[in-house]
Amino acid sequence: MGATHRAAPSLPIQTPRRARSPAPLLPVTDSTAMLLRFKNHLPPWIQDWLDIIVPGIQILAIVIAALLLQRLLRRLLRRAGEHYHWPIELVVTVNGLLRWIILGSTVLLVLERLGVSATVLWTAFTGFATVGAVAFFAAWSVLSNLFCALLIFTVGPFRLGDYIEVLDTAEKPGAKGRVVDINLLYTTLEDFGADDEHPAFIQVPNALMFQRVVRRWKGTPPPAAATVPAEPATPAATAPAAAPTPPAGLPPAL
Image (cartoon, rainbow, N blue to C red):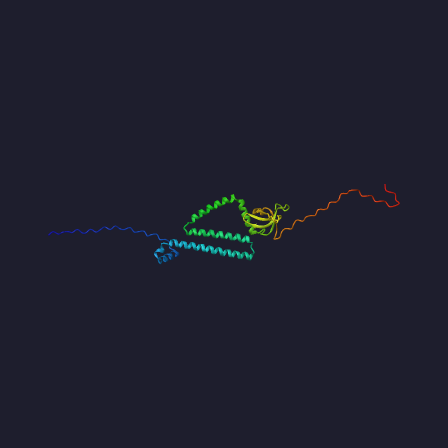
């Protein structure tokens, strides 16, 4: 018998698989790890809303913190003003400045939580700064009054209720009246010489207060100008005076 040779079964050729490159790992911080652990314990329907709930809670916390900070600073500023006897104009100005600073910081933080990048914010800031610089030189007369109003509030050359007179020089009379209002553009004076039934008011630009001589009467009205009484007119001579009569026994004078 002839030997029969069976062909060996062919084995499938296995091609070597390419090793997969590991996925890049994101940096995991403590807050991120805590959020992931907390997320695993939540129901699935809440996990889909976490991307909205977490930024909303952060924005709400930022707004609440800003309101509390503004209230705390306003209370501290009021107590400092009462203790050091600051003028009310200075307290109002500083309070408004702090309020705008806190508001601007809150808006920046909220925009950052919403995903606005710092590059976009910086570009917007530089654009607004450029426009502001152009507007500053275009409206210098108005801005000078604003700056002088800040100086009036801080330096205090006069206050509400004082009587002042704005003079071109120390010799010439000028606008005189009682200070009834100080705003960012004008200082309003109640005309001292006006009638009580028809009061008149004078609005003086704040920049003019630092360009002229200002005479001030603190809390009391200025003394009235003294009037010199007119001298009575002497009667005109109607007839020459009669010559004295000589005594008896003397010849009359020639």
